[in-house]
Amino acid sequence: MVSSDSTTTFDRLAELPKPKPAAVIDMRDGTSLQSVIEILRTRGFCILRNLFDDVMLDEVTAQANRFLAQSAVAGVPGYWKVDHPKIILNPFVLGGRVLDILLDERVISIIESLMESECILAETILKQDYATTYPYFAIHSDFAEGWSKSDKIEHKLAKEDMRQVIGIGGAFYFHDTEEGSFTFCDGTHTLMSPHGQTLTGYNKEQQRAILARKVACTGHRGDLVLFDDRGFHGPDFPSSADRRIILLDYYRVDTIGRLQVTPMPIWSTDIATLSPTQLRVAGVGAESMLDPLENAQTRFKKNRIYSLLQWGIRHAYIKDHLKNKLKHRLGRL
Ligand SMILES: O=C(O)CCC(=O)C(=O)O
Ligand SMILES: [Fe+2]
Image 1 (tube, rainbow, N blue to C red):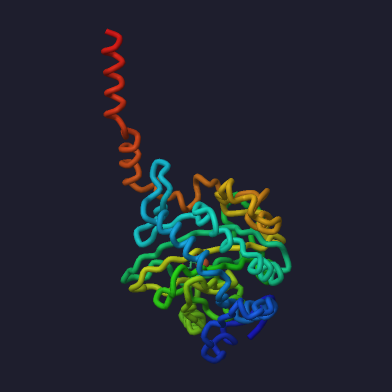
Image 2: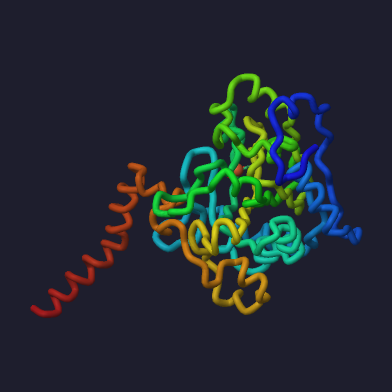
């Protein structure tokens, strides 16, 4: 296997023996962070286990249950909708101990050593994916030469930038996950996505070589899968099981800058609990790549149901309003 700053070819990839199961690192065992970094460098992914205690996991799960029970409409806290098979929200809106998952200092230290740069939490989403009989999220890589999140960003990723670890993703599991787990194509982060981010940009042989490296990260509740965003990855869909995860994306500041896709909604009552490192990675003082009102998570406003809801909301409490109006008029008679 080659290390993450040198490029491999499809031929070399195709010659490799069948990939091993995902490496699971027990964080209770006084594991050296260096060994985690080494696995991420060579294979591009690993599973961190026992990072978080049960009390915290229970607390975050209970809070997520409350938010996922209703949709965020007219100021009611809840989930967001962008397509049929899932519900989502920014995990920061849960407040409280979810911050320990999003900004774990051991994880930050691993990522920053690997990147040889500061990192920033550029994007995060809590997702409840529902079981489907069709795949709705294909295997892909998150970066390729020419990448930028918006046309407004002048700096597009250059081929040379792709040789650095520019993004590390995280997939936090709310529950034991077998079906529908996160999958990573072992070692494909060293291909540097020469024909773009989607698998369909590659010829049949190349697609076969990539997919032959696919490893399902079956895991336990509380596991955090870390992965190199340049590698091919995605959920193991279709799946007959629902799944709930938090996706995280930490970007390399020396390459991409102190930019977040959109700002993070951190509770005023939580912010004082964060260390200087956590505040920095959370994006305090950073700039936003996209207008928060215009990013992909606000897509629902283009749905026809939204106009209907808007009309309904605009007319909510109308009986009280008319009653008050009438009372006022009668009072004046
Ligand atoms: O849902 C997953 O397992 C992966 C999601 C992903 O890769 C992405 O959002 O870019
Ligand atoms: Fe991805």
